[in-house]
Structure formats: C-alpha cells, structure tokens
Amino acid sequence: MSLLRRAFLAILAVMLAACSTVSVVADTRSSSAAAADVATMRLAPGDDLRLKLASGERVQLHLVAIEPDALVGTASKEGTPLRVPTGQIETIEREEFDGPKTALLVAAIVVLVYLVVKSLMEQSLDLSVSRVD
Image (cartoon, rainbow, N blue to C red; front, side, top):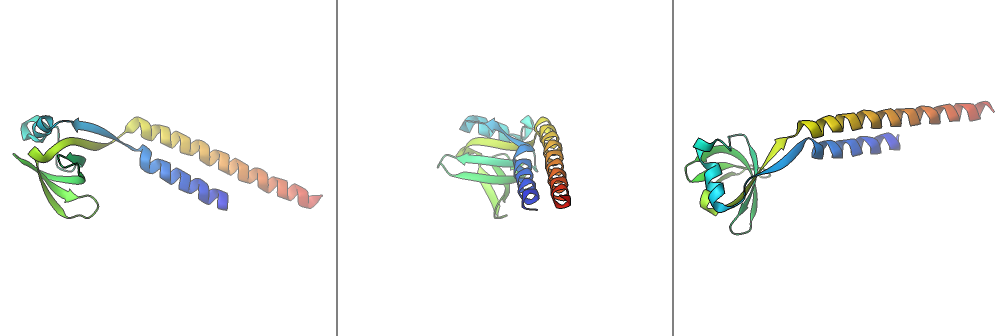
C-alpha cells in the first residue's frame, strides 16, 4: 500500500507542474506598458500573471481588468485586490495551459500505473506461490 501511495503522490506532483508553462509576455518597462494596452490584446482578464516590479518585488496577479495605466486584479495567494501601475512593471509572465506537456504526462501516468499494477500482481503471485510450498 505504501508503494501505491508514493506512486500517487509522485503522479500528483508531476501533474501539477506539467500541465502549464510560463511564457514571457513583456520583458522591459516599455514592452510591459505596450502589453497592457487593450488594443494589443496580449493580456486578457482571467490571465494568471507573474509581475516583476521596478522595486525588485515579484507579484502574482490574477488579472481582472486592464486600465490604460495599470493592471487590476487580485493577489493570487491572498486574494486581496491589487492595482499595479504599468510604469512600475519590468516584466510580465503569463502561465498558460500546455497541451503537448499534458499529453506526455498522461502517457507517463498510464505507463506508471501499468508498472505499479504489474509489480503488485507479481508480488501477490510470489506470496501465493511461497505459501503453497
């Protein structure tokens, strides 16, 4: 049973990391302001963003609205409302769903489950054979 629990936890840890990827949307203050411009449509409400501010602070933001001079949302961890002026943003990264990574993860899970079940069945057969002897 301990083997199954460890396998499940390993699958869960890999699954949490493998289904998404982080892409840089903007990497300078001027490109951050451009990315926040509604006309460019590079950002949209609902995006989960990682911001690096000019002060060096890093902020995780769930984007709710885009204003001409700021990004408005909630802090991902605390859920508190935030308004970050675009002039303070140095880089913007967006977390996105990654289909190919997810497909590889599903294939790996299938193989892992098969190997765990096969191992358990072999152990069960070995125990039953040793009891007969």
